[in-house]
Every structure is written in structure tokens, then in C-alpha cells.
Image (cartoon, rainbow, N blue to C red; front, side, top):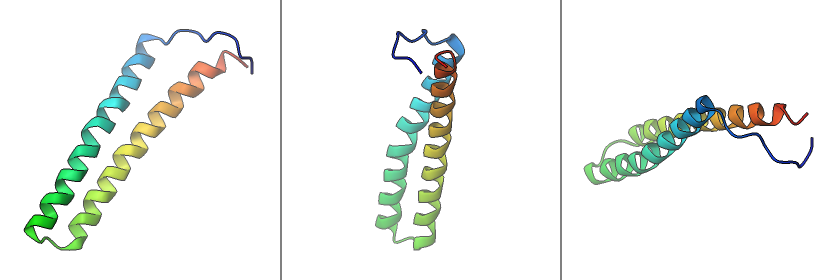
Length: 78
């Protein structure tokens, strides 16, 4: 792998990075809001776990997208 200049991102890669950013930006405050509302309403803890798992799934989805874009961009360097 070289440390030279990277190739610019393609339009498809830019869309994927934008999607990952939107998922993260929406998932985090929504997760906090659902957790707060659940605490205020006194909902059982299983709903908190459900919100936690949904947030983890969203973050994992975004991580996989970003990892794939990173791999695609670094394939040209090998």
C-alpha cells in the first residue's frame, strides 16, 4: 500500500457515505429520545433493550457501508 494521493470518490461512493452519515445522524438522537421517553413513561426495560438493539443495528449498518467504501478506495493502491 502506498501513501500517495488517493483517487477521488465516485458518485456511488459519495452516495453510500452520505447514506451512512444520515443513518448515524438520525439513529443516535432517535435512540436517545426513545430511551428518555421510555424512562419517563416507566416502560419495561425490554423496550429499552429493543431500542438499544435497533440503534446497534443502525450503527453496524453504517459501519459496514463505510468499511466497504474504504476498501473500494484502497483497492487501487495495492
